[in-house]
Length: 178
Image (cartoon, rainbow, N blue to C red):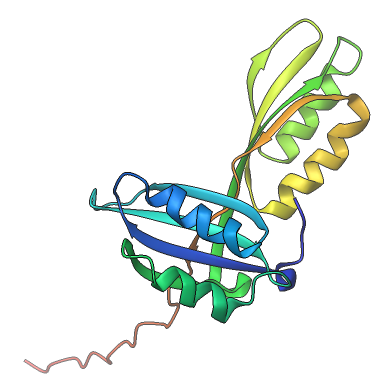
């Protein structure tokens, strides 16, 4: 997956949780020739709505055009562009790596360094589950490549806005004289 969020728009799109909404949104991007790098969708805390995180190529998909087109779709409730500096982003990756007896400990050490979980072990390979930022997943992929990646699957990004971090103002407490 490509890095460099300056090249991408990350859109959080709240939609009605109805049949066909995903295909309508994906179809809109396809008809306009917008390249989708990542698309993740799931229900929200309110079962009436789903949240889609769409990562699109900034060069082929001008933000203003994308949001205008999305707003025309009836099931779209709210669209928010998430700047990388104002968002918490994560992806999930499963990867099967060659790890025979001679390299198993090295792959296990890399998994520990990247906080990956070993989810399956065979005689000649291991499957790892890693969650993190796209950069983190790119980094561990680069380090696992020399061992031999058998299979790899990434979910695509999910993202939410960062929470406000303004300190709570404390009021001075006066001692009361009794």
